[in-house]
Image (cartoon, rainbow, N blue to C red; front, side):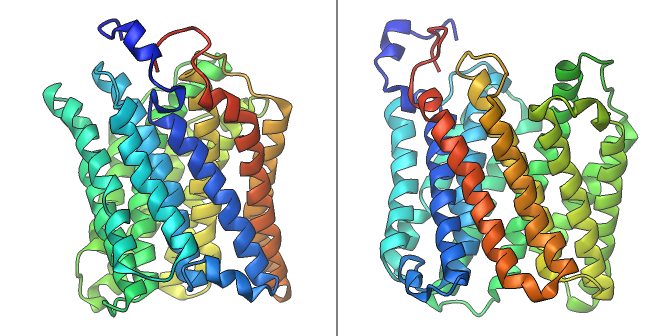
Length: 400
């Protein structure tokens, strides 16, 4: 950061000084609106479908996976690459261009019906981000981090398939495309979570450093990548019927073994840590429940999927953006009590969307509404509390 011209950097609008700022803030706002509409839809207000690309199920799946989660991933990676490489992250007008394409696509799908023009707009921002991510990694030859760029390109391809389904240009089932997307995102979350959670736990609890065991790391990551290959490649159904549940089970078990070593009990007094641990545990449980669904059919696909998405991905996102936003704006890693309320609300949203439905199937619709409302509450709290943090300059006067 010493190579930057401080005077020039201070002229950049604070919101566009690093990618986490606009994407964390706007994506959180989007998720609040999306979940409120989703809850209203299930409450019987079918007229809101006109704000959901005229296809509520497609829109909910697409916007939560790409509009929300995709934006958070891009914001995180384009910020983290600065730490990895020592090269300044994308900022200023270049960052604004990526963000404008993301925003235009969201507004277009909010106010329109399926149209190829909005597909084109929505397929621009991720490849742009992948290019800005890959460039400093390549020039610094940090090949261990380069895989994130093709994963973003892969998400762009899946985004295109989503749009093809909406436009009636593909006969691929929506569930197949959304499941593949969830698996890509899950691998990203598991890789990033496995890198940072032990370190954060060690530093945050001031306990003994959590060491990595090479065979265990490989044992967790290799089946994760094999699972992704199984989902993405055209594996014959009679083979996939065996390999998919097996890989889901092995992935879940190995990550659970990895997780057990991270001393979760020591994090109970540190909200920024315990939600990360809850999220990682939910990821492993979600994988195991999906294995049971595909092997025995004994678990609802929807319950298994939302254990992974709401409890795993959603909670991981909230915990990470709450932490990253403080650290990258020069603030102490101390959250306000109201953010703890947001954390609890999201955990309750997870339980409502999964456990409540499993125990009381007759309350399924009510559980949808409750879970959507609790999610909206959690991210509305984050948006309100972190707006001044994300929209203003760092408190220490440094760039970023």
